[in-house]
Length: 266
Length: 266
Image (cartoon, rainbow over all chains, first blue to last red; front, side):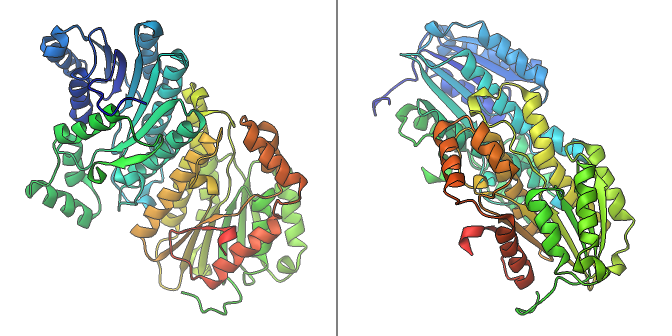
């Protein structure tokens, strides 16, 4: 456990999925400001252009100039090969070079925002669960295997979750189920390996592309209107504000491992 | 809503998955005793021999003699084609012939009973989730589509769940995640379609082949010993006793739609 006044996350190897945009991008930026020089951030996402821009921005930042290293991996985490690409990049690193391993399972998609009774196509559900459930489960297992328990190495796994993992939302069955399953797998992991710090963080309603999808594509009228209202009334959170709370949680390191913690709870 | 003293489940079309053995088999038997003549039970499972025997037993039973019809579909619900086979059989039926549609999503598997950190193979997780999550979601959607809302037709969907859908069990990550995801999808369905009666029933620790798997293959020593103790001390439930409570819930029809109800709660 870190001291309460910890000011940094150590010399860290951080893997962030879905890093090119939205909450993942902000996480990359904010983590880069909290790790020690010679830390390495591995940024995974599908879009090479977005990743290149992020890498350039980070390399030119204060953290980059202080010696934090930024790498990116172009990978579609919806397929086995994508996960393997990220794992390959991780395996090139030596555990001895770091005192903190941080994996942020941020990548995710809303999937079709339709009513549960319409999911008649098994390939659609399979494909959704592959990207949103199997992929973070397997990436986490591979990363933990590549960086096994070692004296002097802290290991932290973040699951970017949602209130939808706890409560049913109309026409959001895929997203709710996927998040519920992820939360549970990470609760199991936390219980199995008390030396690993596991956090399911629910970032709240963020002003991102995903929320735009939510307020335009949600099949349920009432829920769609709620999202539109939140947007027009300026009630959406910035990624910066939400991510700052996640960083505070990681720095304080006092959360119960496996817990689901919501932006609004802290 | 049924009257409190309902003595039967109506003239029903019942689809039961994983019907050839264990809890599914018992459910088929007990439901057959509660439906009216000319009801049809469609029994789905992989093993044709087991299905034939069950069909023969049921045909020779009091229910069979009274005119309840038993059909079986040999299908592997882990693949799209399996779900399609069951749906094909259902689509041959006419909604007008029934006043109650009952789907019991019972089929399921424990999967590998290993620690979460060992699930490095995405195909293994994909395949588990396909059978245990995508398949009941899609079968439910297909059945509801084939039998849309109609005056005079009650529709009931049962999700055979587990305490593992609520609480993490060591080395049971796949099973726990799958059940958590199923529970959530059925909570969403219940909220979306208040006219459908949705029940996640947790049958308790049953003296079945699945429990034998649990007490021999569970990676976690302590949990494995707990299962062995329960077995040797005769603490496992019979399928009959647990299924009787499910039948009581269905007959009374007073549960909150979408609720997770455990054998020990009632």
